[in-house]
Amino acid sequence: MEQPSTQAAAASEPTLRRSIGLWQMTLYGAGSMLGAGIYGLLGQVAAEMGSAIWLAFAMSMVAAGLTGLSYASLGSRYPRAGGAAYITHRAYRRTLLTHVVGLSVACSGFTSIAAGARVVGENLQSLPALQGLPTGTLAVLYLAVVGAIVYRGIRESMWTNVVFTLVEAAGLLFVIAVCLRFWGSANLMEFPTLPETEAGLPLLFLVNGVVLTFYSFLGFEDAINVAEELKNPRRDMPLGLVMALVLTVVIYMSVAVSAVSVVPWQELAGSSAPLAEVVARAAPWFPAWMFIAITIFAVGNTGLINYVTASRLLYGMARDGQLPKALSRIHPKRRTPHVAVGLIAAIIVLLILSGNISQLASATVLLLLLVFSVVNAALVVLKLRPDEPHGAFELPIAIPVLGAVVCFAMFVARLGAGDWRAPVIAGVLLLGVLAIHLLLRRQLVIGNE
View 1 (cartoon, rainbow, N blue to C red):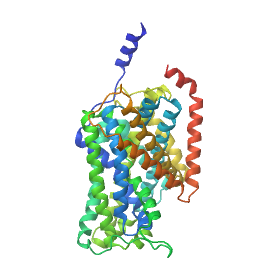
View 2 (cartoon, helix red, strand yellow):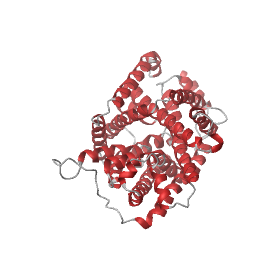
View 3 (cartoon, helix red, strand yellow):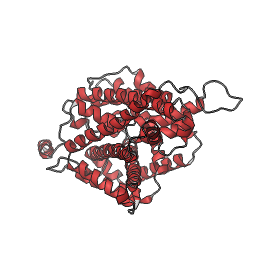
């Protein structure tokens, strides 16, 4: 007797607005991958790969592509908010694992937004009018602007993402254009010097370089979390994500070749702003402040997308009974998960003001590699389950199997990189997630009955 009333109550609740088309989905996916990674990681990758930065991007594209295809297939099967958490729960039906996966993804989003906010704050400080303001204050002001856009609505967030993506893509295309005349002037297979006892391809450098550049492709969770807001999710989710991956890798590899063609990789490795250095040499007539502005747009776009993703993730988990029900509330006018948006803002402010987020952000890479391993394996489980619905984009089972193996291998490689602090921080985060699960265990049991 309670089922009709329950359904009526559910029907009366406001829902997420379906307003995203194919080209917006493509730019959203590309915007989640372009940005902070390529603008900030080029020097570190040069230290590992020498002039063969392009090779690291090509190989990480293969690794990212496997997981990206799995996410595209899952998005066409189950177009709803919740992302990895929902997929994990559907495949394994283990509340604890679902909770760990979902909150691990959320933690990665929080630290990414906070790190980007501090980068924006430091860049804003270089402007004469803002030099007297603390970095933390500028970062919090930036966060307030991003949070207001996310609260305002998915349509506004998407249009902002379109503008920011076009700006950051234009910045990278500008780098390629002014450097094109230098192509062919550098040896693109020059690696850092190895000990005399070593020979052949420097596999250690290659592994570290691939792990670093893999971070630049982390946009799968961002994409799948807005599947419920696509006009035609079964078609546009997989097609948009694949198009975004192809577009991103072409731009990345072209920028990598351009950079080492203008600035020796040894100097790139020692530069705090490698792309700005490349532009300064290839186009000395270009105003330095304009490239700083482009960098802010790029980092801001990553923050905007991570914010949308995190809010939809908490909303989806709360709706499925994995988090307090209040987080599943939708604003009746704005049609956004406003409670989740507000909670995320409070958490990120604490991270910004802590001033020690770089190690935490590095630890989230470990968490995400584990998440991707679990999600790839989940697709294998779901494909083998006969009563599961099929999507518009089905894959051979070998692809998610390879995706799970590659992500776990990269996780092990990251553990062996020699920096013990990142694994410790990741472990502490996992303990915190487990503690939250224990506190909410009674609610989780009731929510799943």
